[in-house]
Length: 308
Ligand SMILES: NC(=O)c1ccc[n+]([C@@H]2O[C@H](COP(=O)([O-])OP(=O)(O)OC[C@H]3O[C@@H](n4cnc5c(N)ncnc54)[C@H](OP(=O)(O)O)[C@@H]3O)[C@@H](O)[C@H]2O)c1
Image (cartoon, rainbow, N blue to C red; front, side, top):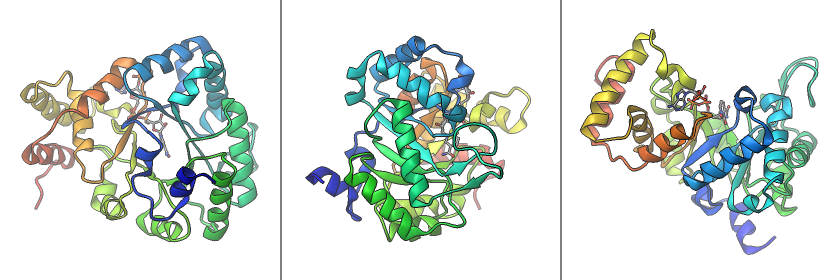
């Protein structure tokens, strides 16, 4: 283990996402199969994203039943020099029911050492790379053995197959109990004006105390924010449009990202769009400094009532 990987493996390492060079705006690959892109088109998307400063790409072994990682690997193979300038995140631990690779009769979670190590190997093969910059447990496993998970993560880091390790969709208690055994770089969680639970329970507060940045998924409610008929979406768009004018922002969408980037836990935000303009809107949002009052105005629109 070199000094850097040893620092990343150390329990007290701070700000690991920054250490491994993740961009604050991360391109989410979940929906890539719906984009119907060829490897050449995805290669262009990746290169243009990176030109915007979005150098981190989020995957999971189950996205498209493994097809998303494979297509990304084909896209990467067209310009191998890109690999050193990007960060690849992937996740494992969900075993879907069905016929795709890793599928089983009953959908379940598997965080056994053997399963996690095999899952990383398969992701590396599909992605045509020799390491993941960040490997996450996709969802908490009710049958988890934290010592076994810690052993698996530490050997993957030692072998150079992953640079850092983290989790996704963990409660604070689940996060803290695993973090007592192994360094965690992040907890990737859902948060948006439609999904406020991480704010209402203590997930963000606990991450701030641990100096660990969350990664936020479905920041735009998975596209719900664009629905014409959704009353909450309409109310939010009205508020966001007013603020976009006030802050001279390129789009009201940027204000949503600004709202998330304002959180003291220093989040990284995933964008799930096929369009580069959407990535640009998120990048622009990172530069907007909302006042405290305006931040609470968005929360009020999200909840439909003022704070107590
Ligand atoms: N850890 C987990 O359990 C978990 C769960 C879900 C997702 N994720 C990760 O988070 C990423 C983002 O999630 P998401 O796709 O639900 O996020 P999202 O960014 O909230 O939603 C993306 C959807 O909104 C649409 N959209 C329309 N206008 C948009 C605009 N201006 N900007 C952005 N999107 C716009 C997109 O369609 P167009 O493509 O047409 O723009 C797309 O269908 C995923 O790709 C995945 O990597 C992780």
